[in-house]
Amino acid sequence: MKQWHPTLPGSDRPRYVEIADAIRADIRAGVLHPGDRLPPQRGVAQDLGVDFSTVSRGYAEAVRRGDIESFVGRGTFVRAPEVATEPDKTLPPPDPRRVLEEDPMMNMPPEPSDPVLVARMAAGVSDIAANLVPLLRYQSVRGSVADRDIAQSWMQANGLEYAPDRFAITPGTHASLYAILTQLSEPGQVLLCETLTYPGIRAIAARLGLRLVGVAADQDGMCPQALDQAITSHWPVALYLNPTLQNPTTQTLSEGRRREIAEVLKRHEMPLIEDDAYRFVARNAPPPLAQSLPDLAWHVAGISKCFGAGLRLAYTTVPQRADMGGFLQALRSINVMASPLSLALLGRWIEEGTAAEIQAFVRSAAAERQALAQSCLSGCALRGAPEAFNLWIDLPAGTSRAEIMGRMANHQIGIMPSDAFTVTAPPSEALRVCLGGPIGLPQLRQDLMALRDAILRKDWLG
Image (cartoon, rainbow, N blue to C red):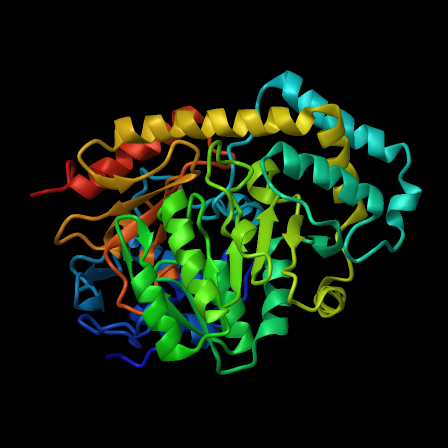
């Protein structure tokens, strides 16, 4: 394996483009030779201090340019000169402005386009601007009493219990997860999770020096027996679970399976961190596990997936046995407080009914996009759910995820390889495909058809 260490130019171009540029530059300089095997993407990510997904997109861009090629089970290699080509001039080059401003690989809700709804959302901004100065002051780390009262009404309208003495509004799910784990863990300890899990918890665990261990699942989700065995074998600090519209598989655990998992946790007195990021998106999700584990479960209900990533807020319920003061102190040291401007805007939307309208739109638009994807990707092995913002696609034998990402590099649809979600086992040949964000339905349809052709090799067998 070539011990290649890329040197990035430090330009204003996206980092993934710089990685592809570095590959081409080192091929032309003779640093890389035809047949050289490039190092694994994880190693390059660590070497450069960037996210895995950035390197994955860089390799995919280099595949698209014809500089390298990937083979299932073998790795990524420099192509011979006679087959290396310049970028396809018929395809538009990546637009650095778009990449720098937004990341289509993130799992975002569909964006409202109805002028009436957008006007109502904007009116909320105007309303809070009329009393702007107080919102620029320091406020409670857990949100003001008025903010928490509004949160109570929203939670109860969505079937969630509210414990006023154990409740905090935080600057987003990441802030809550980070603060919780600083309370529960020390470096070197184990945190259990699904075998395919949210990349954010992987990043937080790595930052805190925790080892993630995936718990085996069956067709119904995490296996209670496997969880019991994992607790006995590893004595973890907690179980992290994303039970509703799970990212990336879109699976929602049934009420029965939730009860079984809760019983295992009760028996071992094991804390649960329930990341309910899609709770306000799902229509009929079963009650959270936390409601049957008041002494053990941290429940984090994010706001961003329902209203937009820029609204960094989460409703967090702290278990009875936990140190509420310690949690709030950890939050304060990391984030100081949730943005009063965001809290005021969300509160105004909830009180005026705009929040319920946005919620209804997101659910309807997500279902429409899921139906479109099911139609466009016929013949592909995909998993989805009516209100999910993404699909999970298992690729056919002999097709690599790097190959597909390379062919889709100049499309707007967000695709992320299985590597970003895989905890312990070697990553499978699978992709998460994002359906939300700013991409419109005509472009989404076009990109989904191109993705189907790439997966099923409709336009390039020969």
